[in-house]
Image 1 (spheres, rainbow, N blue to C red):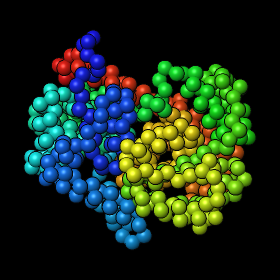
Image 2: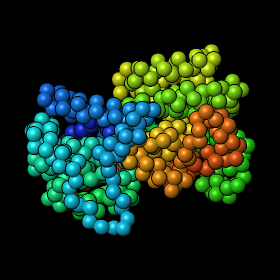
Image 3: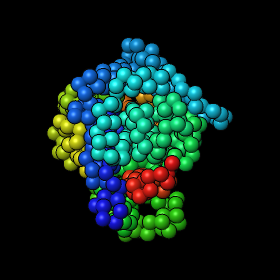
Image 4: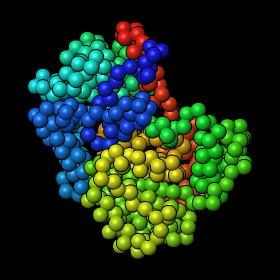
Length: 441
């Protein structure tokens, strides 16, 4: 192992384009491990038949996600979406291992050939399959592959993440939360195959081993989020012990609010609602704003239109910018650079919930799907996020939360209470698996 350039061994890092969540986790792991991301829902890792099937599933999900937020039929479509992603109550503890309809459908697709090509590639390379989506893991387990690692991308998950026969299919799971650990065990996964790692965050934002730099960045963020010093006065003793740099830093810039929509662009309409309310804060230099359209050009054009309607198009990019990129890879790189200078992240409770660990105050838009309801609850229980008030009054409630230290408190709780080392812990697990393939099973 000492001569191996990668302690994790030969790894095929698989992702599926089913929204940004799975791709975001894979991108972070790619940087952590130094291996490329393989999108297994397209050639050469999927046959033409498989690629068409993935496209149908992706279009159906993103279309349903967007339509569920609409005025017409939204309630019915939300019910359909939540039924497809059902997560039963965890308490009281009980056996939840019986496969449900979603598991049976996934098993049927795999038997029909879904994932067959990536299984062939992994087998030929004698590689470890590391995936951020359940379907490749289930396909690999169904084919009898032994080194399969599945990274969970939500704080709680549906039964479909686990094979119909959990004990008989040796998948190692990397869980981002304690609740996900308990859930996987309730679904029948043996405890020794579930590892609490945390969500893999971008290494360039975590900056492991650079504690002084991380602490100084957090101190500057708290100064921006607490302009009246309310939070710093209330928690002076705690902050002096944990963040001594705070007494010496200053930040001449106002806080940056980043509003980010998901891949389906389901909540883009909120920008039109909140821009008039934020306009005074932007013009007076009390707030900076970034609107993130991702790779959705239609949403990007709408953001530009709504900025013009609010008479804010004259503001420089340092005060108001709209982020769009033509590819997911370019978007993720640009978004990560933006997050390094973001103090408040307003988004639905997707996988971005875990980014509160970076010390960014989260403001949650309404969840889309049961898993996002549970992500939001997970963060709220830890004081690391806040539910939005009505968008049309955003300028008022954001100003209040800045003045009374509420946003600073959310950022500090995320920084102190949420795990940041998910990527390195997954790398450590892969190294152990490479050194002793049988030891973890």
